[in-house]
Length: 371
Image 1 (cartoon, rainbow, N blue to C red):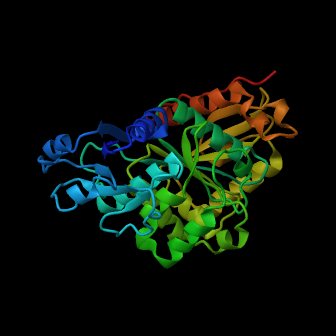
Image 2 (cartoon, helix red, strand yellow; image 1 turned 180 degrees about the vertical axis):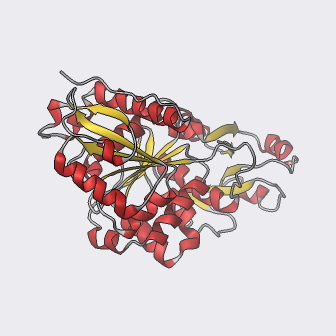
Image 3 (cartoon, helix red, strand yellow; image 1 turned 60 degrees about the horizontal axis):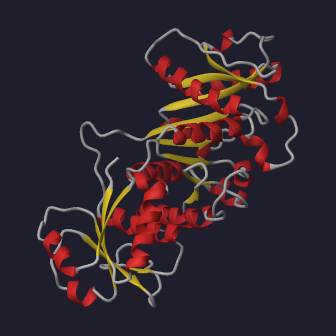
């Protein structure tokens, strides 16, 4: 992914160095390359190159000297008194200096993305959408989705986790600001053309897992009102940010329009099944209702080492088998879900098996059952 070139001219050297150190040690390091300047003359030399793309972040002390200077860079002002500019259409946005650095950089990205939309050209890596689905609850779908997001992130991929469940249990597992989904749904319906920059401001971030995410917490009615077109717009807006290698979409076990549309726009569908007669019956029924989908990969979860049901009626081979984790039979703390390295690592093996299957190999992988 192309990095945003950030040129910082600040009269507060200590603050500027702290800002640069934060960017280089956070998830923003993969998206932003920062250079610091303490002398305005050096910046004048830089902006003479009118082919540069990026952001020129100035403190208010330098603003009068740069106000009328022509540059191809996007100017933004660090202010000690002016509140954040709210609209992405602002000609020269002001960013409040004393907000959290994470929020400041998120706002900076939002303004820049609106002004400089990236068009994916030939050879550009396209964001892949992976949806995790199942025919019934308690299949371990969300557990699979969050661990896959973690494994991809820890291997250097830029990952966005999106839950489209009515109520997301992942909200209690992930660290970061919650409750922003309702605001995003409002903008999605009222001003869809601003959805891209609003995503930058309203998305949550888990710095521990190094993923961005959105999870509904208490928006049951709003989620039920969410249409297929809303989902398409949301996913297209995420892709247009050109920041993510993978979008992991966590779906609930329904055929609500928002769920069906997510399946429709997915590059891969990880369909979780259990070795259970009732679950298999529901899977077959939903599969018939949804119609033929070539990008489905059936994955058995809670596998104990042997199969008791016949999965041949699904019409496709099982792609992978994820192990049963006894410690997860009863969850009492959010921390429990991260305590199985076996399951977490094998979600990445599952991802590898999907890639192999995409290449038309007959190899079917099986995870090790937990003892």
